[in-house]
Length: 295
Image 1 (spheres, rainbow, N blue to C red):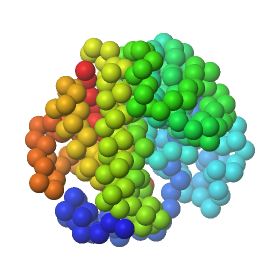
Image 2 (image 1 turned 90 degrees about the horizontal axis):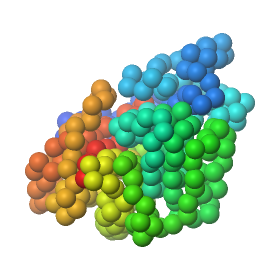
Image 3 (image 1 turned 90 degrees about the vertical axis):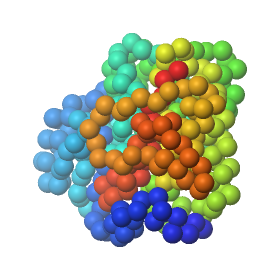
Image 4 (image 1 turned 30 degrees about the horizontal axis):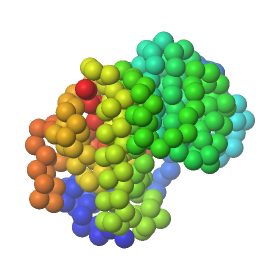
């Protein structure tokens, strides 16, 4: 288990607020515009007397207050919405896809971001959605089918070896496997250790190497985690800039965030992380780290 003193150093004055969140629970959902409009879904929610609040930075997003289990409704089964944290909606938005593009989602399961990419592309173009086990691909395929996604090909391959396909992409989403400490889930916080963080950090670097090899010149790579840990976040962006020759770009989306850490545990990252952002955990948003990189 990680000593929480670590997070005091990461978040400073925000620490107490983060770990003393109110217990009030909100469902976070994203409208699947491949099947229903935002206005139609909002009307459905209000007819059921749900408490509805729009997500400011994502026009398809809502926070819902209800006693009903939104994962078991008919509307969910029909694919009208995806239960997806509001922070998780941002990386696909940063990638800024247009209809007809070709994109790689290197670590795709269970498919929240994949289905969001498809919706932004209006089910045109092509998404290569990759993951590593049949169990994960089963979840991915199930969500693609439920949401009516037609423009996606699913592949099974270790992401760190994907570059061996010789496929090139102008846009890549790299939402890497991570500790998940940004969720503040008690079980995850209990099981996470410094050794597990380091193991994942090494895997994430290998995935960055593979993704950068798959990226065309002037192509865009969006890196994200739902982790609070600098070893999985700033350290890896510093690696991508200094070792892989990628450059960071400012994210032009208006959402609340804190800047990345410029140093951690004796390592100085300097300007390499200047454009990376951290979303602070709250009762409506998971902790997230996002960086837009260009080759």
